[in-house]
Amino acid sequence: MDSKITEQAALESSDDIAVAERLRAGRDEILSELRKLIVGQEDVIDLVLLSLFVGGNSLIVGVPGLAKTLLIHTIAQVLDLKFSRIQFTPDLMPSDITGTDLVQEDPKTGRRKMVFMPGPIFANIVLADEINRTPPKTQAALLEAMQEHRVTVQGETYVLEEPFFVFATQNPIELEGTYSLPEAQLDRFMFHIVMDHLPKDQEMAVVRSTTGLQNYEFKHAVTGRDIVAFQELVRKVPVSDVVLEYVLNVVRTTRPSPNGSPDFINKWVAYGASVRAAQYMVLGGKARALMQGRYHVSFEDIRALAHPVLRHRILRNFHAESERITTDQLIDQLLDIVPKPSSGM
Image (cartoon, rainbow, N blue to C red; front, side, top):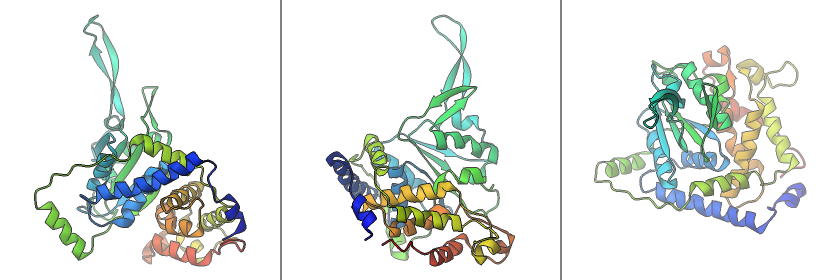
C-alpha cells in the first residue's frame, strides 16, 4: 500500500467509525430483507446500494420482465421510504411529474386561490419507469429535481424531502417507440446499470416463489435518517492523490484529442466523459470501500466502477456503431492502457 494512502486511511472520529460500522451492518440487513423477495442480481443490487449511500441517481437498463421495478419498489419498502412510480408514456406532460397550480375555493372565505398540488416527484424514491418512452421535453422535467433536489413551478421553488433519489428504468434503445435520453440528463445519472437475465437455477427459484402464495413483511432496520448519515460519512472518506490522479487519467483519456488520445478513442468516440464521471467514480469508490470495511479508496474500487460510471458518458461515433463496437469494449481497452501512477498501490 502506498504511504500516502496509509497516512490518510482513517476517519477522523470515533463517531465516524461508528457510522461506518453501521453502514456496513446496514448493507447486510438491507440485503437480508431484499432476499425475501429478490433472487440473484448481486451486482445490480450492490450498485443500487452504492447509489443510495452516495446520494446519486441511477439508470437501470434491461428488457421487460427482469424485475427492475420490483427491485426499486422493494428497496423503498425495506427502507420504509415514500415511494412513487411514474409510468413514462408519449403523452406524459412535465406538470404530470412536478405538479401544478390549481384553482380552489377557500371553504371559509369563499374566495378562489391558486393552490399547488404536488406531483409524484415529491417522494423519497422516485421510479421513472421506461423513461425513454416519453419525449425529451418531459424527460427534462426531472433534471432540476435530480440535480438540485427541488422543483420550480410557476416561479415558485419547492424543496424535496431528503433522502431523495431517482431510479429510472429504460428499455433498450433498439426497441420501437423509444426516445434517446439527452446527454445532459444522462450525465446526471451516477450509474448506468445493466440488468440481464438470471442463470437457470435462479430463474427457476423466481418462478417457484412467484407462483405461490406471497406475504412478505420487511424489517425496517435502516431508516431514511440513516441513509442521510451514510451519505455525509461517504464524503469524509479520504482519497490519496495517486488514486485521484488515476481517476482523472481514466476519465480524461475517454476524450478524443489529436494530441495524446489513444488511437481507438479518436477512431470510435465522438465525445468523452465529463468531470461528473470523475466525481461519481470517487464518491462511488468511497462508498464501496466503506461497504467492504475499509476507510480508504483503492485502485480496485475505481476499476470496479468504471463501467457503470462511464458507459453512458462515452458517446460513440458512426464508425463505432457501424463496426458494432460497444461502450463496454471501449472501457475494457481503456482500463488496459491507462497505467496506475507509479507511486500507487
